Length: 95
Image (cartoon, rainbow, N blue to C red; front, side):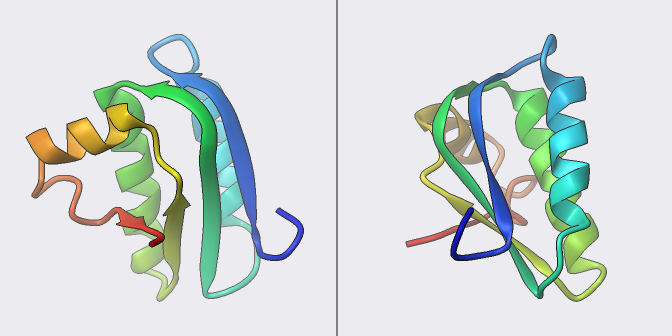
């Protein structure tokens, strides 16, 4: 992302792509700044396991006094968050 510390993901997050997602989010977590941004506008689908990975990263950053801000999450992420509100409470979506 040009104007802020973050990355843009594309494609889908499922059991087959979860290792790549973990790797990308590990790189994101190493970026500087109090808030890191994750652009999901080109993501077509995230399964519950992929959402769990996002929650893990968000919790990890929060534990270090930082935050993860999601931009334009796909419908599937919003649906998982509706089904598991307590588990997904750590996820912050940009307005």
